[in-house]
Image (cartoon, rainbow, N blue to C red; front, side, top):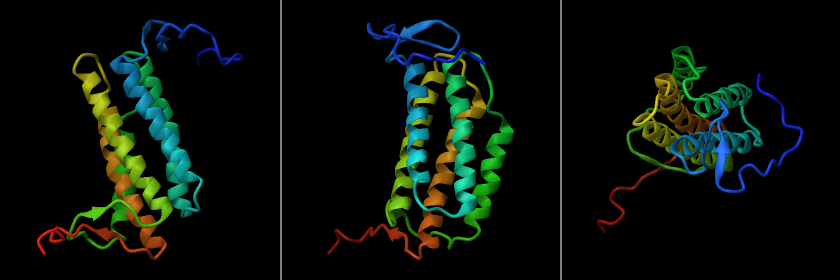
Length: 184
C-alpha cells in the first residue's frame, strides 16, 4: 500500500504535472491521466447513482464495481501494474445476463431516460464508454491490461441493462426511439 496523504495539497502540480503511482511525473493532460481521470469520473457518477433508492442486489453490485474501478484507476496510474482479471469481466457478464433475463427483449432502440435513477445510470454508461475510449487510446502507445479494457466494455453494457432494470422495477417503461417521427 502506498503512503497516505495527510495533507491534501502538495503544490507539486501547480505547473501542470502530476505524479503517477510509480513516482514518475507526467503532464496532467497525458493519455494515462486522461484515462484514469475518466475512470474516476465514472466511479463518482456511480456514487451519485448509489444515492438513489435501488434494488438491494444492484446497490450491492455497484458498490463492488466502485471498488474495482478504484483498482482499475490504480492500474492506470501505475504503468505495468495489473489488478483487474478476466474473472472480473466474467462476473459482470453473469450479473448482466441475470438482470437481462428479467427484461423484455428489445425490438427497438431506446432513449436514455425514465426514472431519475435510470437517467443517472445512462449518464454513467456514457462516462464508462468515454473511459473505455481513453483507455483504448492509451493502449495504442503504452501497455494496458487487456482485461481492464474488456471490463469497461462489459460494464457499459451492464449499466445499460441496469438502467432498464431500474425502470422496470419502478414500473416506468423504456422510452422507445421513434425512427418514423420525421417522416410525417
